[in-house]
Length: 506
Image (tube, rainbow, N blue to C red):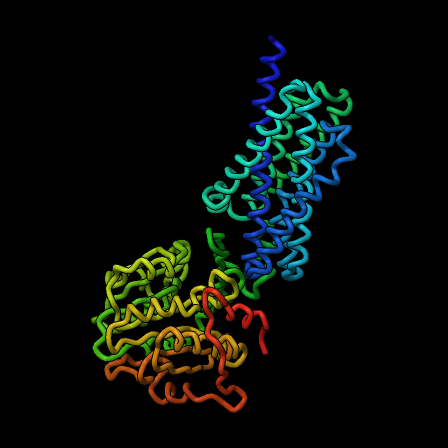
């Protein structure tokens, strides 16, 4: 009876440790998926390669570990030592690689394979320990295997929830992954000290324990110094000094400044430069404000620049829908000098919500002006916000005589994207689209699509730094090397606009 009680206690402790290791393993995969979004745009190709590659690597790892099942305790601890180090440092190493060399799908896939192979080796080793060790007798083997799988899957669930709701928002991408690696090592060290000590020789036990302690020390050191390491690597990405950086639940937010030139970057992509953003903002906002407009809807535009310009119309009430609350906070503080505190104006109502879901839910008022100012559609997630379905819902919020405008990427450098947006807005139900473009020195030639009967500025439009009616009239003219393209619309079923962007710049 004492042996049975001890066996049950060991089994419970082992299963808890297994769940912790499984949680850490899934965090490594989720961190790679987050990296794919932050560093490579997170398209369908990258996501599929990481998910499919990870699953395949699990099976390959289980197959490759078979010759080592004769030494399950030693092999398991060795696997956990390498996994904790490799998985825990994966985000840090890949970030440094990206900052100094450039983005690479191949490197992401290789990191996925390493993590998957090591995680895949865990279950066969643990099954062998349960069946051959002193944690269970042979008659309970089937029950133990089922329980082991349950603990493994439950741990994966915990890891899947901990990453977006705890580790990523609280610690960030790099430190969150390092913390998962440290937890992985701690669980393995507990297994070694409490459960596997008697299954190995004293010499092997101390070697394994020392290796785990060294791994834990390395991860703790990196956890303490990671902020400085990441800041050094991040600075290599930007020509100007980084004055603010934050990894939100959705994206990497960076603000740089040299002299009076302040710049906002999301996931490494430049959003605006304070030296010439007025050209972009004025071209986006003012053609979309009809005579006697009383309310406006901004979708995106988290930097607050569109709201700033709309507030120049005294009688205009503004609703802004933005997904990422962190961007709003950055706009209210770090970017306040550029947007003049627009998001704190009592005429502006900021809603933190997914624009697609918010439009789909209905129940909101209609608007005289709708401004869609979103990042370029370099992923399936963003592509749905450039779809016929999305534009159709946005158009349904317009009052009669209202106007809608969409930022549509570069009319010259990415002509397929630009004319695809035009075709999609028309397909969504806009009877008259007016494509136009303007020169923004930081970006080059940049395009917009206006849904309206005419491209005119209001008679009482404020005095602007760049735009007037003559400039707007000229903006609707395209050169012979940039004639309109007859393209099919982008839809939820066929997000063609992502492929357009993947073709790169001409």
